[in-house]
Structures are given as C-alpha cells and as structure tokens.
Length: 608
Image 1 (cartoon, rainbow, N blue to C red):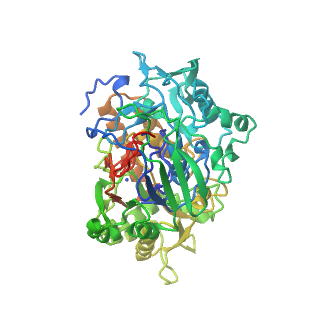
Image 2: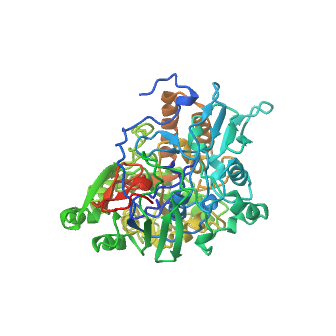
Image 3: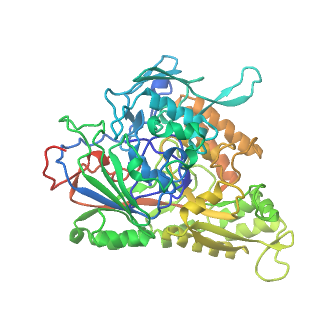
C-alpha cells in the first residue's frame, strides 16, 4: 500500500473508505468526510510503528467488491491531478518505489526493494524488482522512473507534485534559501540513484511518488500536451497499470469497473499472484445519502458511515451481515477559509477585510464546535484546534491556541476593529459596506452542506451576513486554484498523514495549494515567511524530538494567524460485509488499504 498525499480536502472516499492509492508527497482535496532516540540516523528518520500488522491468510481467487463515491474523476492523469475525486479513482493503478504501510506506518518495498542509503544520508539507491511489467506487457524499468521525475519537475506540467519534490537548501553564494530538485540518474535498467543536497527527514515520503508509464506518456509530455492527456474522455482501456488493478470500463455518473492486472508484481506467501478478487466496482452516486441507501440495499460492500446514520447502520449489523468499525479520529481536517488573494476578482474591500487577522480571530471564536460535534456528528467526533489531527500522535500539538465558542468575545473584537451597524439592519459594516460573504462547498457532501448551515447561523449571531452555495466538487477545486480566484469563502478540507512535510504544498507561501493566497513569489506576510522557514528546518532536521518541536511551533503560528478556521474532526466510521477475509482496519487506511490481499470467503479457485 502506498503512502498518502495531501491536497485540497474534500477527502475523496470511496464508500467512505480510502481506496488503496499511490504514494507521494502532497495532500489532496477530498470530497467526503480519516519515543524514538534523538540520535536517529537518516536511515531511521521515518514514522514510528503504531501497530503490529496481523498476519495475512492465504485466500482463494474470485469474487468482487463494490464501493461507491460521490464524484466523477476530473482526470485520469495522476500526475496533473490535485483532488481526490481523481487520485482516488486512478491511484490503484500506480505503484511507487516504496510505500507506507497504513497499519504499521513503516515504509516497505514496493516496485523496488528498500533503498541502500549512504552513511551521510545523501545518496539513496533503489533496485527495481526483477521482471516488472506494465499491465500491457511492456517492461517497467529505470527509464520509467527517470521519465516520471522529468515530467514532475517540468514547470509546464501543471500538477501539484513538483512542490513536494523540491528540497530546501542554503545557497552558498547568496546565503539565502532556495528550492532545488533532487539529482537522479539511471545506473542500469533496474537501478536508480537519488542524490539529496542535504540529509532530508521526509526523504522516504518524497521517494514514494507514483511511477508513470514512459511508453504511454512520453510523446504527450514532449509535445507539451501532458496536462490534457488522459482526461475523462480517454478510452480507459488505453490506460496501463503497475498496480493490482486495471480499469475495464467507466460510465460517467454511474460506475467505474476494475479488473485484475495479470502482471501485478506482488504475490502471496504461497507464491501466487495477487490480487485475489477478480473485480472491484465503484458506483458513482449523487450524494452521501445515496451511499447509505446503496449499502442498505445490499448494492455495495463498504460504507463510510455518516454520524447521523450510525445508530441505524449499527442496529442493522446482524440482519445485513456486516460489521461497523469506529477507527478513531480521522486524519484530515475541515475548515472555513477566506480568500485573501489581491489577484482575485472578488471586491477588494472584502479581500482587505479577510486579510485582517483580527477578523479571522473573531470568526474563530464565533464557531460553535461543540454544537457541530453534538448536532452534526452526534457526538462521534471532537472539536479540532490544529490542522494536524489528534490521530497523528507523533506530531499533533495539543497546546495550540484554542478558540472556544465565545460570541461575546467575537463581537468585542469586531467592535475594537471599529465595525458597527450604523443603519440598524443587524449587519456590521466595513468601510461603509455591509459585511456579507458567500461560502462555497461541494453540494454532494451532505455533511458539509449541513456544516455550512451551522456556520452561517454562527456568523449571523455576531452580525455577519453569510450565505452558502453547493457546487460540483471538481468545479469548486478548479475555482480555488486558478484565476480569477472568484470565491469569497469556502468550506473544504485536506487529507492527512503521518509526515507533516507532506503538507508543504499547502503551507509554503509558494505552494499551489496555499489556497488563501497561492503561488506567492515572496511571502506576503512575516508569519508566512516564518512558516516557510520552519518547514524548511523541519525537513532538514533528523532528530525526531526536534522535528516534533518545529512542527508544534508551526501549528501554533498557523492557528494564531488562522488562514483556516478549523471546525471539528469526525471519527472514522465505516462498515463492511462479513464475507471478506484479510480485513485489517486502521485509522489511516480504513478498511480496504490492503485491497490486493482481501479475498471473498466463498471464492473457490486455487489459481488466478
């Protein structure tokens, strides 16, 4: 199983359970609502093991697994995608050199054996497994690895992966920080060498990028067409895979069907090629309520359970022959964000107000998180104070500034800013204009729509006029990360994971997912400059205790400046039919992270 990415959080769950996806170094937008010694060497600088993974049992071949999602993909091209509606669908097709085990939180071999690392931690050498093939039979070699990096580092490739593949170093001439690509070279058909300019703590996460098929994409990249190649209009049979699955059919707004990849490299302990299942199906449904209806009707096998449905689904376990799991706090975070981008087409008066830290602080005190947990999550969650989830026990800072619900304090702050309601209509004014803003969110996420309803009420309580609009998730993401940046506020989220530097594309001021003011040439504010410095330091620091302190400091600064107003983190709730084996629930990967070794209990074939 490959490592997770971070990007815009509309956390794309399929049936509410994360699909096994490809590794990498970014956080992705999601469309749904989961002590080490201080003398650590570069070889040891990786997440601590959280659990011992249960032993896998040998299975029989046959059967299928059906899940559902609430969004069509925006693209089938993983390397230009920035949202989980796309990466969740195409991720199962692409493997990495190494991958993060969602259960143990340790990196394991994937397309390559675990790397040989030089004593200084700068040179990482990977040996690809022998005989690797793409699903179409073409050999998978070092040329594919080199091509993937050439494509990612090409500024013309408009994906978010490049930001996370740059290393921060000090220029010896100017003494200033600069971001540089890795050095990499092919040693032979199976061996690739990476050279870091400095020892880098998130090296494993960086090097778990999904490998692209050179024989399929090179010509498009060379012609400058990579950003439009493998769009949603592609014949999915032209896609090739290095993962356990191939896509056999796609019917927009209906379903995506996967079949076994006959050339998948991984085998069970008996030497039989995985996966065990013959097929997996992803139904595309209009909203979260439809997910529940499909599961209750027996049309799907896995469900991400909404808190409002938890009691109903739990009560139906015996009759429905399934089990409900609560895997603890999810790993992502949901937020309210205001557009601070002066390049936006939004009224400059509003942008100026949104740029005011005191305004965002007043909003933070106005959010009734306990009500969100009680009314929206029915107690199956908790207020969230940091952008790192409590699930990330290694890096979560419980001591960040907390904005307990206090509308009186909100009003006091707004009054101190000189805001008042001069005409008595109940709405405060800024520079002579009523303070009003529209919050956009993805319409298919019923939970998020309900959250917007609660937030608009909270804003009304302190004299702000907030409305909200639900729109298509992929259109929403497109409006956030491209000109004219025509949005005022949004409710979304980011995916999460154990490596904080995976969020570099969000927190670096130059990052494409620095959504309140993306892709800055220079930090717009002193605090953003400070965050840039902390994230650079965190990446170059190998001592786990020191890294924890660095990212704790970053969390405190960010939660003081409030580019995102956090809301609440929901428990990771899911249900699965009892007809499957090798189910290993965990908070990071959910129920299907090890999909290649899941088998159907009544399957009968001994051979694929």
